[in-house]
Image (cartoon, rainbow, N blue to C red; front, side):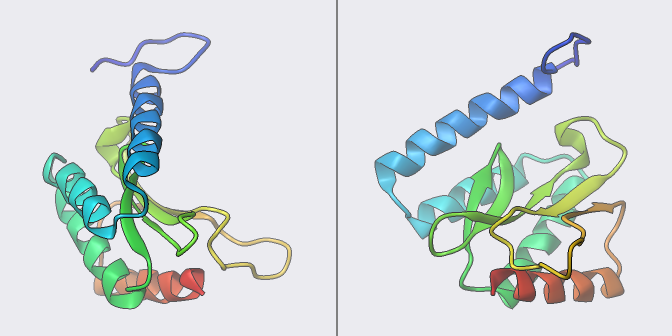
Length: 145
């Protein structure tokens, strides 16, 4: 899908918004079905181009190992993980999603990362080193509570 330059949303942003509407309807229909959320997430990861796919697979392994209580799901068509209230805690935005030069691992307001009056809510990723994976694991543990 090509990006169009307008005063409004890009084609990619519109597609993500449509995906979110579908996700909300599906969640309302099936409830908090962890297995269905996992299948949705794995399907999105499988459809990603390299190197996003490899990075998303590693992120999934890191999150599930460090915060198994978080439920896998999709969020605007991206892999994400929610708390027991169904609120998104963290997500992976592949670089290909909006034709960016880097992927993003981010946290939503349900993440318990508060440190003083200012803290980071997302990180640019160009690759994942062992040190990066350890740091993400630590942050995910803290974010999950």
